[in-house]
Amino acid sequence: MLAVAACCAACCEESLLLAVLLAVRRAETLDGSFSVLTENHRKESLSRAYVQAIAGHAGLNIKLEQNVQQHDYGVDGTIRRISLVDGEREDTGFCLDFQVKATIQWKCEGDDVIYRMKASSYNKIVRQNNRTRALPRILILMCLPRDPTAWLDTDEERLLLRKCSYWKRLVGDPTEDSHCTIRIPRSNRLDSDAVKSLLAKVESGEWQ
Image (tube, rainbow, N blue to C red; front, side, top):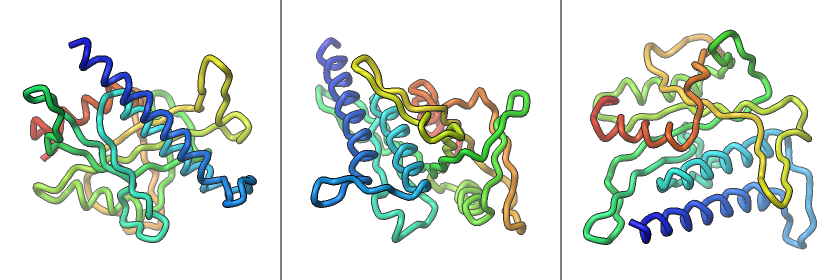
């Protein structure tokens, strides 16, 4: 058990480091200098780093779609559950697709987070979740502060990435409008326990 715990801790540390490097690398040019990314690309890099760090801390494997800019079919990545069998780790085959959105255009109303989403992105998630036996897909919404200087803070003791990410499994009828407003319960906060619980839903067949 100690060996398993040590290995999980090492995997978590490595995943967090890779997530931070991914966010930084997006801004680095070939000559080592730094250029200014568009605000949307900065948001995307931070949101992917957030999800990767959470998955790593939970001991789950994650695959990020690196070419989402060129081939965006509505899936940004997949979280996969790993098990220990006879002293070796293996992929269980239970996994969960996700689409991640990072935005400053959000607000809280009571116990919900409100976000206005493009219909094209919404419909892709809904249609997949409506298909029998299709891999479940969730929306991950990263809510950023309006001030970009508050998005990330580091010191010798911590790396602080603000503010919070929430998840929701979108189901129902596709919309014919250009946008739709979604409500995500604030209790659907994306953390290590949440992603493990979501994978358990997939494994149990609850989301089939």
